[in-house]
Image 1: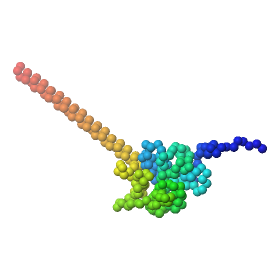
Image 2 (image 1 turned 180 degrees about the vertical axis):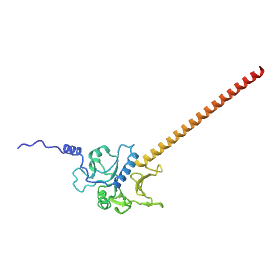
Image 3 (image 1 turned 135 degrees about the horizontal axis):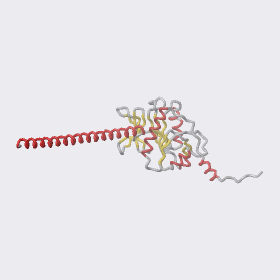
Image 4 (image 1 turned 60 degrees about the vertical axis):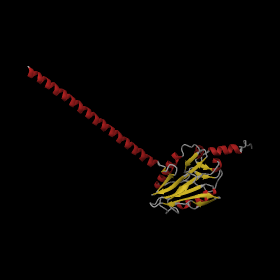
Length: 261
């Protein structure tokens, strides 16, 4: 029997990397999907000026292409100094191919798998050496161990990040890798930038800002139109008065001429 030429490891690896990873068997409930949309729409524009930052989620996180252990698919990952297009094209984050683990991972709790986020996944992401791992719970702590929690990798182990509670109920902790405060504000994940002293707007807030700006522009246009109408009316009135004065003067002039005759 004849055999074909053996494939070199380099070619095999290249061909394997050209194949996207399979889609994770994961579904999101409506609240979870809305929360993730807010997270992505806040972080992606914030880092958009840099071409080496990945903000994404939903794909598998694996050590290498041959990893056949438990597969995890973080809801959100942020990685600096990587090729985001390559990772997205791969449909997953393969650490050996990206050259480094993600810097940040976040899980939003779901009814069915929330317990895995603060137990099994917490241990796995530490083994994968993800620098920070954050968790947010739509239920306020019923599905996770807390409404908001974060861990930072220290000597290969996760150490809890201090979470502060404000008088109004706002929870927040500082993310060193993002340079942002991760906040839990009345059931919403938000990100506060200490440098600009403002929250990163998400898609819903950006739309509200655009709508408010458009409403202000409409008010300005209406005010200008009203001013123009008022000015035109004033000009028309002045012209009418001037015409009436001319008419009266003409009438007086003719009346004086009749008296002399």
